[in-house]
Length: 363
Ligand SMILES: Cc1ncc(COP(=O)(O)O)c(C=O)c1O
Image 1 (cartoon, rainbow, N blue to C red):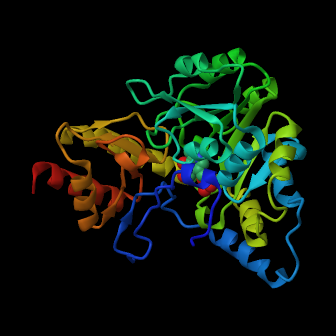
Image 2: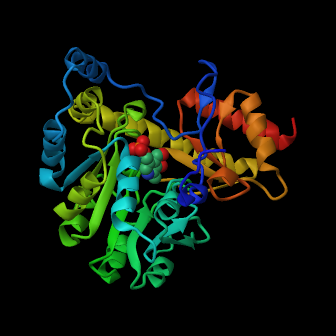
Image 3: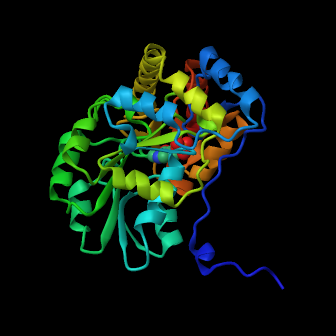
């Protein structure tokens, strides 16, 4: 007899896993929105330096990292939640807030993990289509907020479509949402956004809305995806307490904590890398339409490309892979006929653009 699992396991969708991590160096890895820049040597050293103390558990209050974030953002340490990647905080928020009878509102397509929250908890997911430019339609989302709503997720900039909405529109949305509804502004890519401002801009919203949570990560701009560190700046301490309550106490290893603390000390270099990524992104967004594709206005470290009518997305994705360029197929992310392509180095981006041009020409 097979093992009998809980009913909810059957409802939970599988996350679309990226492949290609075993393919070696001559592959342009543009499928997972990672940073093409490696961690700084000082960050690697800081992570290595703590390894001799691994006979002890990590400090379960994560005091050093929380203090460093508190100093940078001017948010009290007791309103900063940490996690094993920001995904960890997202899933914990689902567990802490949702249950059968409750509702969760988010745009679709958005981050592939969002559907997991409702499926795991038995809550009802309300997926609100993006607008014609593949941006969040906050007015339509507001219409879906009911007495049953516990949680709203706004992905800004949005994964997979790369678009962002201005904070004036987020502010107007927050003004209308009842104060007992938790709103998570998922800002995994905020540092790359010109539309939503710098990573300090949304802090003003946090001061005005205790039900708001700004969800951030060290995986993207800080280049620490493999170490798994995320954080949330919370409008109230209650959110942090709730997400800590539903998780094991030791969710962050010592090397991850040390690397994150050190990474925060090198903002000049982070900004230089952001500038380079944005320049490469703008070049891609400018160049690609000449191939006959539609490209969303990107505010992230990736671009979203809609293929011409009649072009088979899976043929393009496999054709690109055959040319050593790995990208994500739109169908696996909620929208067929599109590609999500991470901005890589100049060389990788050129390799992608040339391969796509050849495929669309039928070469
Ligand atoms: C919008 C968004 N939120 C959150 C995450 C989770 O990132 P991590 O768990 O690595 O912090 C991602 C990762 O791709 C993302 O795209």
